[in-house]
Length: 101
Image (cartoon, rainbow, N blue to C red; front, side, top):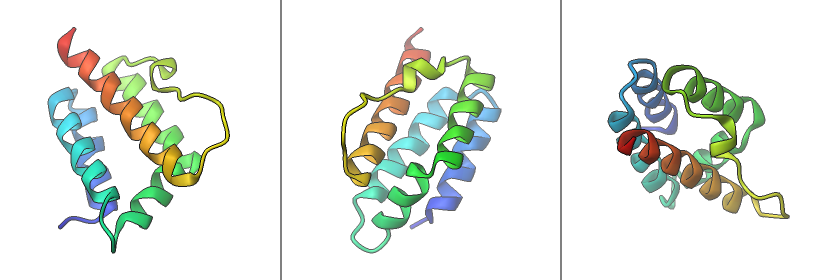
């Protein structure tokens, strides 16, 4: 099993190469990693850090042309895990729109 850092590095490589399908595969792997009992907390804490999330948004908008608005989540009180799941789902949905466009 890969670590969350290795998974994100692969994701960013796919995004830099403008490979939306590869990026989608990596996000799906990341989503599965969040469910892990032993490693899930690391996945959740990494993606909910503002600097890391800003990096993901910037890379997706620069290389794949995904507007940051497409990756927004609703503003309401949520736990950290709920935010992480929402962020991953938003990124996944935006990548699917790029692939289908």
